[in-house]
View 1 (cartoon, helix red, strand yellow):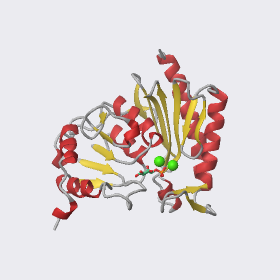
View 2 (cartoon, helix red, strand yellow):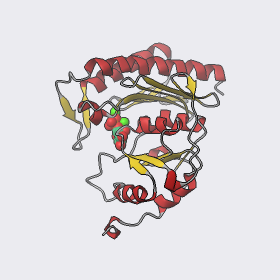
View 3 (tube, helix red, strand yellow):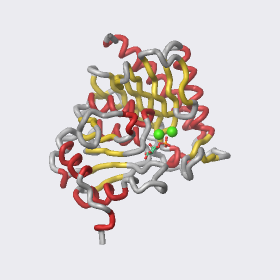
View 4 (cartoon, helix red, strand yellow):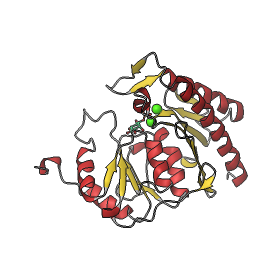
Length: 272
Ligand code: IPD
Ligand code: CA
Ligand code: CA
């Protein structure tokens, strides 16, 4: 059983790590000499991703050397028998960052016995720090945040994303995007899943869904949305399974409506 005091300590460690990474992201901004592709076309990695991750790992090594780690660029590290697993995305929004489009963040979530319980997300380009811990609420720049109250799908603003395998599969979220664009005030595509979840948590966006994302994209944001009063599930409203890569996170009010539309989405060919 992790006490509230321990959760606060872990949240402060996550905060130290995201702020350290944020300084590195700022230092490399506009100065990248090389942008590599990791395998799939468009799946980029830069010196900023790698250096930010190395700095985060040092912070964790100093404070919690016995915990497990799942880091986007380094994979599994530390003790994987541990009940504590840190899911790290040193730069969420690499494509934006590489183009100097300032929507990107560092996201660090802590899973305890498989459940996300602590999260910190920092966007250095807006100087926005989002923090949350289970049972202790969610904040933006240390002020309490809540999800929006929008209760009608037709009045909502949503956000989604498209995974790097989108050219290789027909399950690429294009039909869902068109369908929900038709039914709402708009569907945005920010390019940073963690910031999408943070935006749901602070009420700027009413709902977010995506397929093909990883634990490091969502772990911190899940805690934020839940602690801000929202709902996070699978598309069909069953409990979220992070390994499925599919997530639906909303203000709660429109959860069922979005879920039903995602489950009954008409094929793209019907848009003629
Ligand atoms: C990506 C972003 C993007 C989402 C992709 C992610 P990265 O992460 O979160 O919004 O649509 O699925 O992979 O590669 O910038 O860390
Ligand atoms: Ca990411
Ligand atoms: Ca990343």
